[in-house]
Image 1 (cartoon, rainbow, N blue to C red):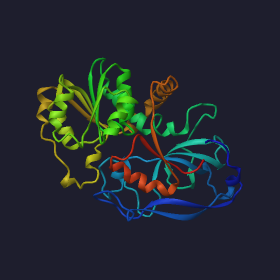
Image 2: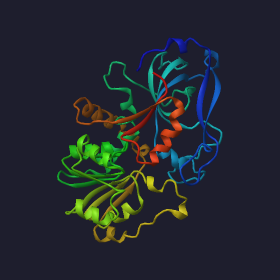
Image 3: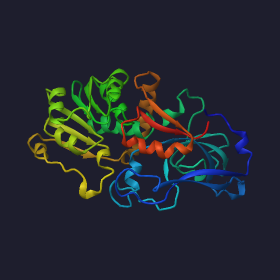
Image 4: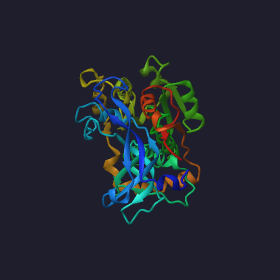
Length: 357
């Protein structure tokens, strides 16, 4: 997947398809009125590339739920800047260097770009690019999953903030998603009993068979979350990694043990609602009586620990102690449908779009 593309590199002008934000989406699942695809002409002439910039061909782009909160037109939900209209959206991507005006990067290098334009070709500053070692035997999609934002988010939640003791009862929502699949595996490596909630029976089987979860339940089939949590956690919950928010978070508060931790990395059940319609949490009094710690976080606040994370996760991957699962859709045209699919129960694992090879 990481070979050089001399044909593209030899060109001086290319047509590039790119996704841009045409209108803000304050509520509901975004539509094609909000995110649109267009073609633009990109010059790859060396003289047209600014100093300390590189020309990139996009190979893979991660499709992540946090994009939903950045395109509402509101400031503040995730404390990320509101993107301007008619500009290309960005994501965590992997690209091939076609031309470079930065001495650290050469033509043919495969790089990770945390602020990659969702575009077939782009000219980007080299500041945040990280070169992938061409001798490694780690598959490129892993750099967008277990070694990317989902894996790092799970690692911060389990290793840094939650840090459960062996034998702890751990609950993970959205357990078959990009973050949940790694959080469960990391908790199992720490000797915990782990239960996950997912959106389908196939996903329940997946988290048990492939990710090592002890138990799981389909939240679409459990009409009473309170009863489900009592069933799966007869001894209470010591750590809850919340990826969904809403009623499930509220009911978890009825089943936490004394000194429990609740770590919040996302609230996907609330992303498509305006603030006035979001579900409230009524059981917060349990936090007082049980001395519960609840903490939300952005993984960007822990970038100083990314090196430690990458070293540990690479070791786990090579030892086959961590298993990723990817849903890879083909072609940049599939980005919108891939993004919308995050708000259904249709995907198994981390959603990635392969743009080129």
